Length: 61
Image 1: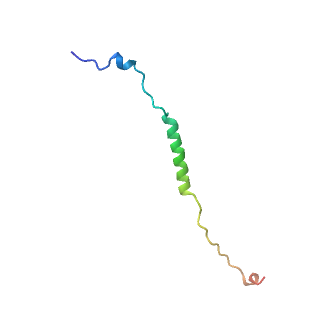
Image 2: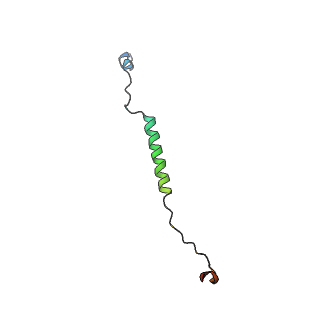
Image 3: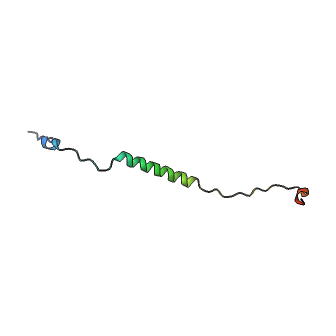
């Protein structure tokens, strides 16, 4: 004799759902992660000196 593992008492109960939906949380985390990645890659660039040769005639003017 086999014992049934599925009985009607377990199937009649509604499934318990979490209070916060999962998809919006994942989307918010992805957006925050994208901003953090762009912030880390970007930012201020160090200033580079640009040296140009100035002829002596222009230095006196």
